[in-house]
Length: 261
Length: 350
Picture (spheres, each protein chain N blue to C red):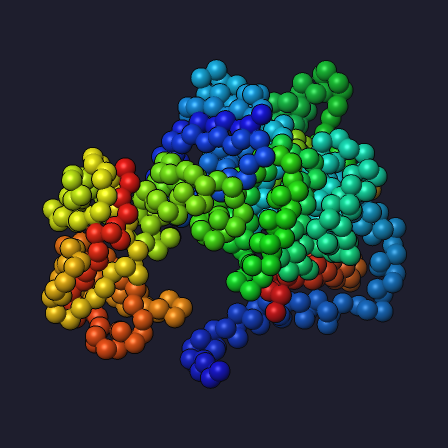
């Protein structure tokens, strides 16, 4: 095949565009104090932040799957008035500034919030500025990624497999667990990984709704930001760790994003 | 003990309105062109599409009745369904595909696997039990689909174009196997097809439908000898004319008159086999009483013979030898005379 000649203007702009992504990553790698890496990574604050990040993001993913898959199913399979509006509302956090999400969560679940004051007076439960609050903030921001991915999977699957299962005597639950779920497996996996990656990197909604208490609500991104003020070298190393995790996510989803070729 | 279905429903451009009965032990083939509503009728019987009026009864038990609102859901109907592209579950092994129906209906895992394995043996695929469907050939998939539908022991087996997904070379072999398996299944069998060879090979009785309606039913012999629609006539390869018979003359709808050696009168169909139609360059003289001019519209080879489509007052297909084609100079667009004897015209009531 003849190679396409690249117009000079396109080549220059494309090069600048690529450099814009590569240079910051390069800076992170070049300027990181590799000699102090072990020390920074094994510092108690780091371990604590990493542990909290993992627990919170995995919990957010689990909640996302448990609540998001049924929601996606409803969006894909049930026609009801206001469906598009509801879908828009549940995907809004993807485009909403996370800080605004955090404030909205405070107004709903804060001690004097719509639901929060009732939770506080009736059960004595307070959510903001707790680890549970971190999970909520991350779920709020990350679950939409799972919902839209799973809904797309449900819409593109061949529903006649479900009909075949029904002609074989399978009731709805069996059809869903034995046929529908396995068939949308790749979408569910991709959605869960995206959801988890987004939860792991969550900053704005978390710091607004849950605050920044080491060991309780201080996740990795929050720790990185704080260290930037007190210990820049350590913050570079933690940034690298987050970069590495993102890279792993990208590799896990390579068939989806980078093509199988 | 039988199937008794009267199905009326509208789905997009299709208006289905058909009654269908299958007697004990019968293999019925549902034959019709694409878009006739064959698959939709099958899906209605299985409960996959709702009917707007009518009923579906199996062995006297009501599965669906639009008048009373009774509806037995698909999963509770004792009906096996072999889909056109088989729809084997791609994530399950061949064995798990076959045992799926047994497990769904409450058979314990061990028993279900044993029974499924016996079914695989029956269709000659026991060595593929652990394979995934995408590792099988088209013919093997068809057999798995059949085993999967039969394993839960249905009363009625529905097959939607069971051989359409296969290439021509394997089709004949798979058709022979399918016929054997259908014969050993004791319940009612309904096969959808648009292939007349398949229909004749597999079925005791043909039901021909067009545009959502029944146009003809009977044994393969009855249907092929006395076609009642252009579709069936084309399938069988004969010329079908419709008209009003009176004293040995059939007055066609277009105004032409065909002489026939038959005593029928009233509304009739007339069939003329293409072999009985003779072609001439000039107006022939002699005994044939039916003589027309026409223009050649198309010429095609069919085995060792040539089928010539002739346009004119009465469009007719003639069958001649390649030698005759050459001798008569029968090119497309050429003027030609055709003739056939009154005794070669079969007439029967419409």
